[in-house]
Image (tube, rainbow, N blue to C red; front, top):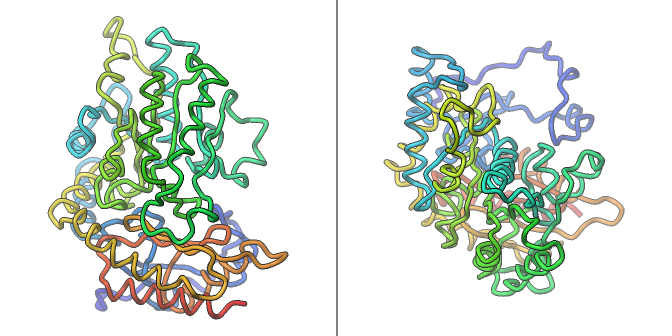
Length: 447
């Protein structure tokens, strides 16, 4: 932290009432707000000047740490030359440059990039590409989409339809996309508790897709979308062989396989994409978050070249795909993306993530025998501790651990009864030890 630059001070007249915060218990938060005003490297600085170790890379996104000077400079320089350019019928050079860099680190044959502004938009884009692709091939009967229980694919209507997190869906059921089905999740504590890395049990759960094919007929199914590792649901790790089975079934029946890599991309699994880690190549990859280390909103979909070429028919003066966003490939976001990919390469952050993985594994599993711990799991630079629920107060025990950690100097994430970690590859071993110690203290401090 650069001590020569003091953190900004909050105005005593700051009015918090007008802001409706996302995925937040607004009333409780505003009674005891946790407000950060500065970030640098592995730390946030709060309004009262405390340093908070970031154990979640912001929200699974700041993979090069906060305010990396190379990325900051790239954004500043871009703003000095071009602030915005419309992406419809014009484009700027940074978008082409970033697309080429992404194609270079994507699985072989996946070299076409469509930019969005977020992971939610990336998912809806991928689903639309899948549906339109089959229609362009003369396969318009393929309208059905298959997601997975406990899956998280953003908050657009397409994403919550294929997603499987009940709280995200129940209020919006009347507007769900029709024709969606869900695979079972891969979270069975009776068989998989305290797994280190990928569980050996559970590959057979992918066979449910074959049953769905028999139920619906393959000719009606356009795509299957899964997170290689389910992050938002609390680091649910795929069993060995599970993703390979999904790939085999999709290939056999002409179904597109979409990997939602919004969380797993750009180092979280020790590679640019989890598909490389697992040795499974999907047909479409969605990305966001780590693409520019969270600097400026940016997301997108990467597709196989032959999918793109399927759209490139008919008269050249006609639009091939009626979809896009005002800020698709925003100049500042793309400049940050180009710089971030250069930082990842030059600082060897993929290898650094692989080196830290066993360190995080040993540390997180040291919590196994702490009070109320029912599971510990990890993969790559992602880990979770699951707690037993407190009778009549679901998720409150985990929330109190989260509060303890923040109040004593570390940011973690809680969802339901799960405490999750996703540190940046720039973390040191001592910083990981500090975060785990605070989680341990937090677990011991709550009944």
